[in-house]
Image (cartoon, rainbow, N blue to C red):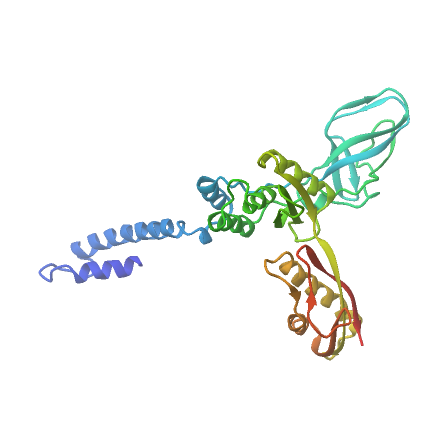
Length: 347
């Protein structure tokens, strides 16, 4: 309620025996009180709003959830791994010395001394957190500044273990899951909680007794609902092994790709060519497939829904003869399969 409304209500409730005209003592005193009451009402409204988790973001959301459930927001990680350097004569490296993949910098994380020329593996870490440090093999190949007696550097293996900080929506969903399907005594929801507490993990499916008594299979996707990397799978397994009940035999896997090839006769809007529209189709369907990956109860890819997605693609006016992997019907999908866009053909 605004100060003006509060002030008017106060005047209405004040006896007409008093002078309530603008500028009078009663008018001015009650106006001052109304202003302060309005401020307190705003603060009270803010407090009430913060009792609803949907209104919380950032650090407030992190603190609210941790205090009530012990769930911590998954922090961003720094991509890291080994690079191979060529040493031409005795030299040393310091913590913080840099190598680079174009304009992405990585620093040595340990000081080392090399007494003779040769090739040596050393550990580096990206200076920026998140997925920016994920690069293919061979990408790290330069020095921002010259390092004495070191001539070359190369990463023989891709770096793929940099992940962003967990989003508010993901953290909030884990909170709801904890309340609605609490993990306890090593039940399937406990395994899901353990897996999702590892930075980089997205959706999770758990299959108790999948290979007999005391066996548990945990299937995980990454934060983008793509296939988890081997290093992420290893970290999930290590964490679950440190938490699980005695005697359980745990297997951690990622999803299996279900490649979906799309063919259709597209009617394009004026000014568009299919080669222009094709990447829009792939991007739209890839986004949709990520949104439904590992969805509970998902038994098939809907032919009709794919059609609806196509009609929302820029440049497409209509379509006909839509085929998914050569079929005019829905496509069955397994419990651990993840739909992936294959070829897109205009017939």
